[in-house]
Image (tube, rainbow over all chains, first blue to last red; front, side, top):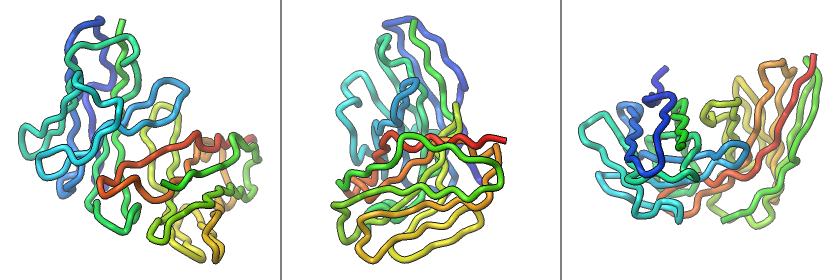
Amino acid sequence: EPEVTQTPSHQVTQMGQEVILRCVPISNHLYFYWYRQILGQKVEFLVSFYNNEISEKSEIFDDQFSVERPDGSNFTLKIRSTKLEDSAMYFCASSDEGGLPRGSYEQYFGPGTRLTVT
Amino acid sequence: LAKTTQPISMDSYEGQEVNITCSHNNIATNDYITWYQQFPSQGPRFIIQGYKTKVTNEVASLFIPADRKSSTLSLPRVSLSDTAVYYCLVGADNAGNMLTFGGGTRLMVKP
């Protein structure tokens, strides 16, 4: 069964450093997402990406965050200057449908990257 | 965006049927109801989706009454490995199709 993969599984970085989290979505999917989950809290949407541009983003996704699909397979999330509060599990997801009716699709999540900012 | 309400936690024993009910009083006409499962330190995993009446797959059943203001996820004969958080999601915020997760229901299956 095809799956979303993410690297690294765990990233430790110092405050103020840049990090890049990498994802390989399922190959025929067209929609890509990043979510995060702070320990013990809800899964929160960060950004969705379609046709090489951001289609939606949340308030969390400020100027410190960026996403890119540098080639035909990878999808990356960059945090320019990490803060302590960026420590969380970051999940990449992909789907092969994204249109209406709303919610009539399935998003496939990767195993996550645990980001620890010290 | 329809708000969902589901129990914070539930306990069950191996072999029992578990029913988790979710309320979504302001569900919109075009909204689907989707359930995801999340094990500790893993990403959410799609379980089942429905629009009305009953949907069944190899993992679970989803019961949706005619008014669609609630839904019930039914897990037959749970095992210890079904211990997880179960999320009820309704619709999507807009055409970007972001998923909005609530707190979910933490199911603990005991031996």
